[in-house]
Length: 149
Length: 310
Image (cartoon, rainbow over all chains, first blue to last red; front, side, top):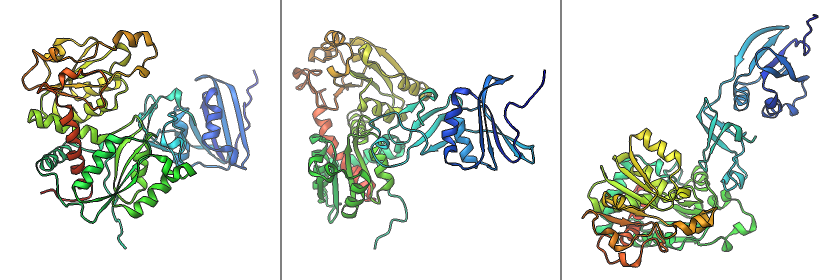
């Protein structure tokens, strides 16, 4: 069988691989890719020997900051980031959930001050394994599947 | 111009205080109870911002300030403030902190006091933020326990009523957690103590028992009987409410075999959960408990303003 790349190779930039298909568009929004002018290739429901089906995002000429990529851990803790220079993977990175998330997640409590005042949300990660968050303000706890971006 | 090189201390959550902080406040509360009229706040202005009405709490704070010779500004409901014009909480806090040396606030939104404490150049006391926190209630409860039992250590506390939503109950469990208590949780099925507080007790090595009926065992083993209101609106099943509404009511004859040192507390207002016939029993302590709130608030205000209580 002819083996072809499922998504075109990248000369320089970042390839985010092994994204669970249901998390792909959340990753797009977490990294605010819609605001970039770089060349971006997005593939979803591709074959994966590791996870069955997967999503992949390739962003040309873009190298993300640590705190940007660590946001991804909120929705897809097992993704791999390949840093590519001259068609070569020069570094593979795992995402690490930070201790605190500022301004990304919406608080699920309608009576929380953050939903009623023009201000940034702030969450403490109280369980990194289960991805459980606690609002710094109203103290409500949010489970991984309840996270709204 | 006075500058604030350090963020002022505020009291937003009982967990802002460690064991030493709690004991310091309780010792100072005792000093104010012995001698409530002092001039520690002479020349100071305190603001009471009640975005949600709470007459009892506001009067307690304002009396505390008056007895310390401070002046009070503020509002008791939002109809008279710029909030009705759409002003943000931030702007209200920034303006009032220009005028006052300390802000006491009650707000219907959860987390509002935490946010205010982060932006305000003057200390904030949280007098209730939605169903989240009301730390001076916890401190006055702790003082009432300390005063009547002469210790906070190794006591058995029976808590009765709405243990699911009761803010005062949750904070009391946290506040007492430093002092090796044993808890008896007495509640109907629908208002049982949430799992997270049971986990909290287990992590801290605190013993607890759960009861679904208001048994003599739970009363007679207690040093403190902490009653709370079972509210009709908390029930999804009104049939269930009808079944339990008269079960968690304390009558005087239920105290006949209780310990001599037992005191009955209640955060008030009560409705029917303590019968009037308990009021004359020397073990009833809820009105004195409310009075203690004023002394506790004197202690907290002075503490946050860096005033040494002698």
